[in-house]
Image (cartoon, rainbow, N blue to C red; front, side):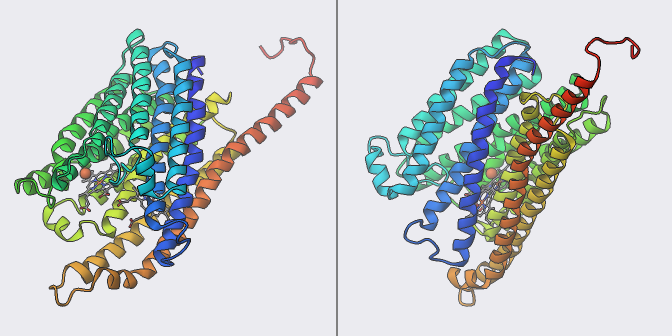
Length: 481
Ligand code: HEM
Ligand code: HEM
Ligand SMILES: [Fe+2]
């Protein structure tokens, strides 16, 4: 570690992993509830479990982005973090607010939660992904402001690299677009319209900048390729992401009320959105091919390449298949959407956080060249289990979605099956999804286990070194020099 203040990233990463485990527990429960409709009812209704699953995902990704920024910005700026203390305080504030909110979801009926958190004063609750009580949303804004301030001040006093600039632009965008979650007009069309300003402009806009910056940082570190080369790529990637994403947002405006011209604008611009994701694949593989040195942390390289590939598949390919208006007319809100949501979130954002953790954690734990080989092998098992299982989940849901469209959406009204009758027919695919959910969790457990294997192996190696050291003369004999 170049700067001691980088160590504030550690609790962020560890807590992110704890929440990740929680997210998957609820994913598993949801998968089961799809098959056994009243599983855990009335203690944990589907809508509550779903809210916990998706909210935990967003919150742990935010913890991951914050940890990543605290780790990489001091190194990029070549200076200590502006205020490690502020970073530590904000960690506890965010962790407390996050845990309290999840407990609120689980212990109190949602309407009551709205009442006791005074949602009536500034109503913001009740919308997918933005279910948090208003007070939690205010907490998130405070944490984000403090975080952006801390990172911003560090950048101001230090070296200004392209990676820093792209990252801080993404982080400011993240904070700004979250403000739309406070705008909750009673007109449903307007409400949905601006809901996407947070939802879409995050994942298909500013988060892509954060993704690009973290990926570029990791690639520079593990390949030793010239910064200038990486920076040129980064400019083009983020330029394409912003241009295509801002108007591509129109693919969410097809059926909610805004003008018909969005059918064209949304289709054409969002069809360009896969381009930056594809460029990330080319970029990552080119950097690794032209690497200047072999980094000891091989599994971090695998994660970086994996992020590019899986992000492209999830966002680029699975985004494209339902983004054109004539297709989306039939697939809107079907299992195709869920297939894409899973692979895109996993491939792009889950994996980039796991990438930076894989690179930075060994360094923060005193192993600059990566974990011992056995630990890297265990981590690789985790990598492959997670990636293949998520592809399995995605394929199961894609087939379910196509079948759903065929039974429920394509036929004329009189012949079309009802929603619930269609769901019954999709049961086998939900079993497959559940099975892959199980293997996904096995992968995550292997990933977690690699941390413990690393400590154990390192302790063993130290012990051996000490024993050998004890047998050697304390003063160097000079024969080796
Ligand atoms: C990493 C980036 C991305 C993530 C994390 C992501 C995630 C999601 C999620 C979770 C939804 C469901 C939202 C809801 O609850 O209704 C969604 C919807 C959608 N996404 Fe993405 N997405 C990404 C990129 C893309 C790209 C690049 C495209 C197009 C090429 C795309 C096309 C769509 C479309 C058309 C919908 C609407 C589906 C419907 O009508 O039901 N997405 N996305
Ligand atoms: C890193 C792994 C995961 C990520 C990133 C993730 C992400 C998501 C997202 C974004 C949604 C909302 C989808 C939408 O609105 O279209 C969702 C819903 C859901 N997830 Fe996951 N999830 C993960 C793991 C799992 C696992 C392992 C399972 C279980 C097998 C699971 C089961 C579900 C179910 C059943 C829903 C509700 C879908 C619906 O409303 O129809 N998820 N997840
Ligand atoms: Fe979108």
